[in-house]
Image 1: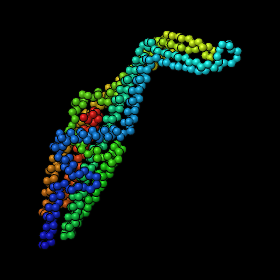
Image 2 (image 1 turned 135 degrees about the horizontal axis):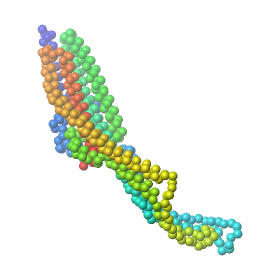
Image 3 (image 1 turned 90 degrees about the vertical axis):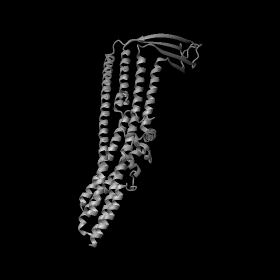
Image 4 (image 1 turned 180 degrees about the vertical axis):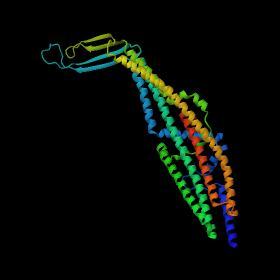
Length: 452
């Protein structure tokens, strides 16, 4: 009789201890898990998107993205490429101005020379050429270079957007794994506590050793889940080191609040042609049209003016002559090279136009697909929240019924604990999947690099 009473007393005391740890979040899990206060914030879905929190999130998000852009060699490379494209505009414009060349030298003559000649006398000549009329050839080239520069700017913007998306989503993935690690730690602590209590119970009731085996089996599974979460978290930590530099993962803290609400998808769709990828292909199309104009102008007459100041006979005379010449060149026959080039340029321009339309459709489709995925993920978050509230109360009842009343089996108790663990996993996975989708949509729309 005393043995039974002892077992019951131990069970009641243990149940109270376990209930206490189940109601409150279990301390600070070791390792790289999120702090418990952040876990509480993430679990309180109705309060996730306060205006003050969103403003703080925007400030930290701007700091994070700017740091990633400043640290990235690929962004600096794209910036240099953009600057080079701008200089090519000046190169094309320079063709409108006179091209002036100076030539000088010394000529030595041998043989019978007139007595008045002065061998080895240096001479200087000046030659200038300027286009008079070219049927828009230079203008087309300038406009083509300007279009190429705008395309380069759009691709630079696209690259900054992609880097911002990669940085922010990697931060969110890293935070997600830290949250999952917290859940795994919490589950592991619960199972460890259960194993300790059951060890005490089996000392008084050896017939329950089979339950202890079940608990230890779940303990191994909990350890494995914890290590998996930690290992994945370290993988994202390595990615952050590549994107932000070593020991800068703290920049990821505080950016979550901006991504709890779904973006205005209709407003984003209305501005789809402002997407950098679409703009880049639009300017490629413009550049292809200007190339067509340039080739077309090449088939027409070119009028140039040339002025020269040169020695009559270098080294033999001190006299110079001046000339001013107007020349016109017209291609009569070139084996249909220009005609074929013009047709090829026309087909390339048509292909560029089709690429624009295809890109618009693709970008809009990506927006809609990601928005649908975001909506589904956030709906699941609501469902997980309701199930967690119910399951949390049920598992508390199971503890009391198993330890104090003996009305529940250990299998049922372990199943409820595992259910709580999987529900929390599902909650955080759905929450962060939704946030990552929101960040991707915002990034593609250029909103991550245009934070005010």
